[in-house]
Length: 589
Ligand code: ARG
Image (tube, rainbow, N blue to C red; front, side, top):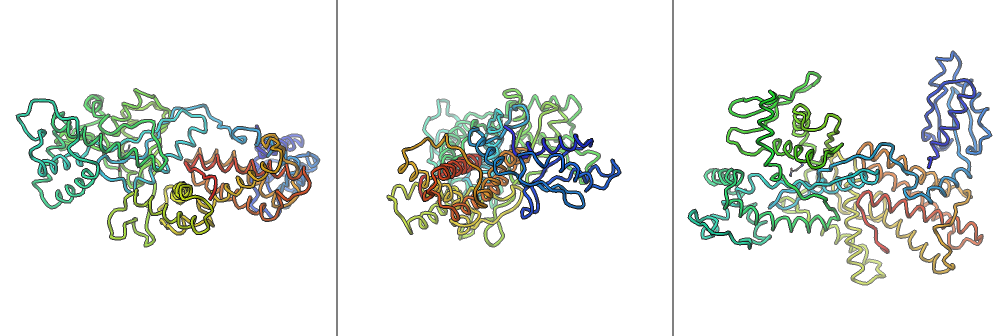
């Protein structure tokens, strides 16, 4: 299915050709919506080549095509622009066609790709904090957009499960429960299958151990040794590690479920360990990596760089695993298992240097196919109202669970103010709407920017917020339900949209028809915020239409059916867009 811009482009291009001009015609949305809806600067671009004043060319072209039914009005304006208003019928045909198309006219222009989205990035045994929220929320949306475009997409949580936190926990556990068999050097038997701690104990152990390590150098040294022992396969350390992972993963799954975020793969840094030695040896052998002060590094600086990029450290002198090494070895594993065409990583933008080092090393060492894309999507910090990284009231790191609960409560209070639903429904609605507030508040900002988390603003039912968008959808759902109750349920799916009969209807249709282009640019630019902008515009346009048009009270049955068809399309487009953002919608609010 063609978009309206495609159709107009075709007609105008033919116009240029019929007048004897070779032009690469581009139709864009008008930046003067008061004058026209679309515009074309083609005459300006070719005037020089044809030694003619641009308005003469524009005049000729307009004269050739002005009768085409796609235009309500097409005029040439000095110095040579072509201003276009689309005809009511063309618009009606377009929205009706969108209504009949599963993806409302959206088609991805490239072949299906295999894509790995590395997001979430939680660290086992450490509590999920708001820093991980952005990765999960943005990554989930990116993944959905990639899938919608027809790609085969695999999301991997890529847990941080192989670092110093493990050694810290092991040693803290030793201090607390020295009698455990794991600490008995002479123990030969099987280790217990039951973990020696619960999730709440585990969550409490890590911060204590981390604090202790900063004050107690000997403890820190023990933790380092324990980490090294774990990494070199010590059975007792491995047994404790297994317990930590079991307990921690269960908890993480619950947390991600609460966010409505799910992963195809639950792999972690530890899964890449078996690939490290061969990979590093291979890099040394090829002369890509070299020794430097006992460590092994890869130079990644390039001539065109305008700042200094330090070498990528792939092996430390004590042999401990490194963040970059583990990401490189993960690439080795992913190439073997999936041979992806594209990798997308969502992580804090302060990790940019790390990803530059990893990507350049991977290219240099031919770890990935030369045509594979490696994309780092770095996001900014979520700040509190004071402009500093978001904290709890007492200054601690904000836990994700607490944050979700806070926003759910704020929404719940608003819902019960004028509530007409049962307690259960109010609770469930508050959960859905609260999550929408949180996710939309995040996704509506360009990912790379820092943003201010403002609970009151995010949970407001007015303005550019998740609840406002949901409220709009719920309003449409309620009109449609009433329509179905009163009419003999003529199939809404089959209703056609007639030519517009008022200005707000036209405005709504002009917003709706941008869908395919918006999704395409959100896809190409990895930019969920473009979808937010779009659904905000559509919601405003719908509410404008709603306030100026009698829908259910319309007495002309043909008009009424057409309105119902149009708002059905509006609902479906909003729901599809919300789904791409990973946002659910309730039945009522
Ligand atoms: N676990 C890391 C952190 O908490 C994020 C992981 C990002 N992904 C990656 N492949 N390095 O900072």
